[in-house]
Image (cartoon, rainbow, N blue to C red; front, side, top):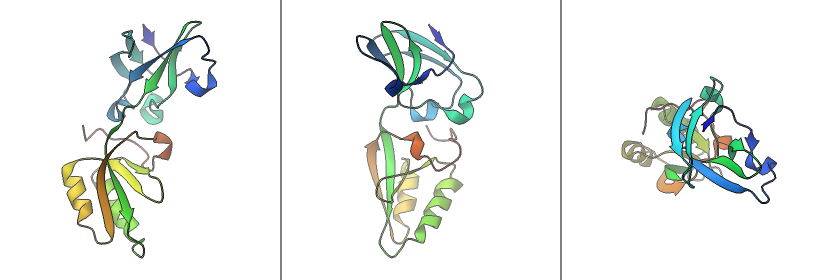
Length: 158
């Protein structure tokens, strides 16, 4: 089966009586045009998107296929991230945090309660932990691309 467009969001579909299959698209694959995947129910899937996917991306809940019996939707699995928070009184360090993350071409997201989220790698974590007034902690999290700050996702980190 080949899917060539996003049909909408899973929340917009009537799923009653239908099997919902999920295809895992890792965060660093979200902006690629071509994929060969297998759903969680074993359906082999080719994904071939047009150039708009390079800026839009494939997000959690995007529906790639739908018929009377089955819907295939994107699942973005949790990944290791760094949650960055600022100590009260050190809010101006937000500029330094954003600069350092952007300088390493890493994606940047808004987190809950005035935090920032970026993809985990050990050098990034150590660098952020050394910044005065900044707390950086590793955790496992599903990325919410609607909370993305950086304009594009670069595939420098895998």
